[in-house]
Image 1 (cartoon, helix red, strand yellow):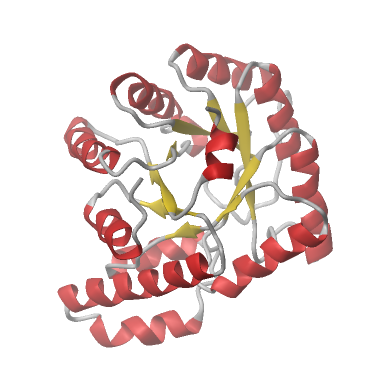
Image 2: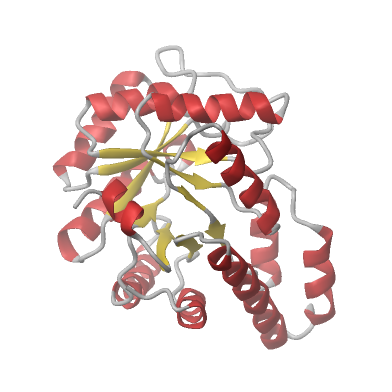
Length: 290
């Protein structure tokens, strides 16, 4: 069964995200996490793609190992940042050779400063829809894309942003993963706008339990600085109590997850940060195991 078919059939399920490890010790710990979470049967496991070449080979290596050594379906991130079209074709070819059939096509942010003006590689691609077409032309079975509940920073207004998202679907994308947001209403508004446009492509929300002050800083990058003030008010009283901070962060994620499920969202994308415990806790609390 294809990934789009699995997504269409999903009900109270989850997917998970990993990032390539940076050294042998962290790779060993990461694989222990992979083995623990594989037992919960996520619909897919995405593997992030490093900017500037830092972990691009690691993406191919980890996604290929998931395909070869586990029951997981890897979804490899692919971005156009700093890459020629020929190099991107080569990466897709490497993924296919490793048994990885599904790709998440992302334009990506400029290296070093995500807010810097976007400048494509002289022999590269300008937009994510071009990357969708390239991946499909090279043999990817399915391609997903990013969606932005608050709008992409480069989009002048929500209508323009929606047109760009619809353009990625017209290019052949068969699902989208929404940028992290802690306000469920942001995601639901985007879902409703897609439905009103006649688009029934699966839209998957991301969920990250903010279980430490360090993770709170990570959310600044993942949400482009749009964390809601209420999140800080919820977590601020626990800054000096590590255990209580984790419990409150998990409680927030469970509340958001329950709201999304109650609104008919069939699948939640869980950011693991290469650790198993928080994902396991959310899967158990929300009843997401396959």
